Length: 342
Image 1 (cartoon, rainbow, N blue to C red):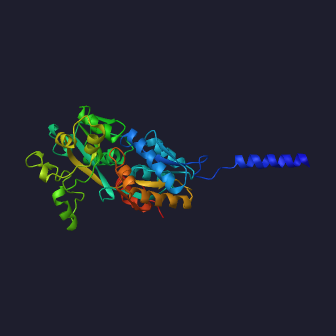
Image 2 (image 1 turned 180 degrees about the vertical axis):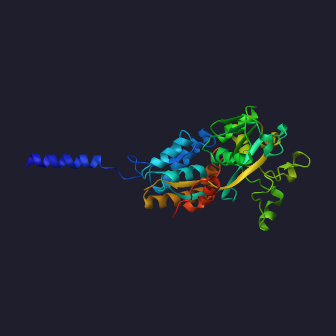
Image 3 (image 1 turned 90 degrees about the vertical axis):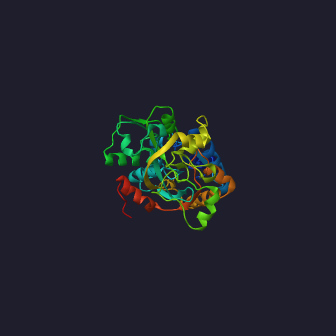
């Protein structure tokens, strides 16, 4: 009898240690996965602080991980078994869901009040490019072939117009792509764009009138006086928050934002595209998912959280909007991906 009791105690002990621990504990953490799309060191620092804050708000143990590259992020989200959520780009999300339709989006980024974004084509003004057709035969730099605004949609646009290049250079991140242009290693680059903001002197009046910049307008409105080929005077000048802003605030060796706007212009834009998102792996527990979604909404709308999510060099999110998978159907059509049946 003593031997039987000893065996049973041993089985109970092994069982306690052997069974999977509850998700969201140090023994079985929830993985928060980040894509290295802008500045990797900033994404790591800011992303880890966001994960820590969400952990404290939910009581869940969350382990932040920055993927090695775009492909590694996609592979990790496809293979995850109910323990991972992440911040995929628009194109990544659509690729992931083609392989694993259980992956699902819950929150979309909102930047400057816009739930969409676009790709901008950046080049040194001294190059004299007046249209995208001037890019024929030139050297193109971009972050990654998996980047929505860096490559996927611009590539389809260039192919549609029959524009080809002497070289296509993948350099890792959006920031690196613009640095390649500034260093003379490429004639132009593509990366995320951002709506220009009006001068402070008229911003409130425009908002009260319900007017704002929309896709299709001049991407350098209030920034670059095309008639005089110069910056607008300070009192009439708006604010720039695109890739040039990221370089000015995070890299800093190429001058301030107005030095960069003076050097680098926007040749054209491509889009629009729905913003990137927060997505959960297939099989993620619904109750924990709801906790995390509510925590992110609260966090980004707090002063401390907003400062993290909106930081240049990170993803520059200003808010989030609740969405479902159908939010990306317009992009699937644009990119030539199948629209899932629901």
